[in-house]
Image 1: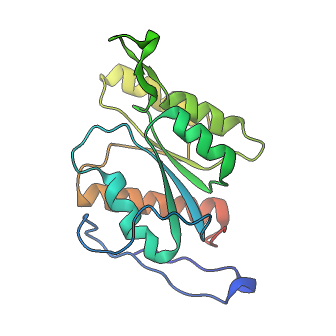
Image 2: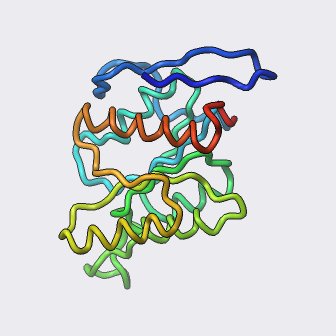
Length: 187
């Protein structure tokens, strides 16, 4: 259950909740084209799953006034950061920079997730960040986790694959909100 207080000057307090077992079914809403809500959430996603968590999470959070802004590449996320105040960012380390291979050919896709994490860390007021790690070797995984934490990541989580993983991500987002905004909606 996620319970958050509102700013007293913006309408008192109210409890807002998300129950356990959050799957993708049900819930109205979506990515939300609103300019800003109680909380602007950046969801970067590398496109590695047919029914992604990035489709489910906004439907669960939209009724609470959380506006989810999606980015499929590092460049999309960078442009979004230029025009929108993001309160919490979920950064997928597998995010491509452009979505096209380096050099324009059939080569390797440049990494955008780690660059986005660096950009968020360099902001004058760094955005709290939850990092979604890639599936890599244990050695590479440890290296990535250490690098993310050095850049100020609030938490590093496995790639969400089901309802239980979404519950973990929701709990991490709740803890991030409590830690960085003292449990008060920032928007």
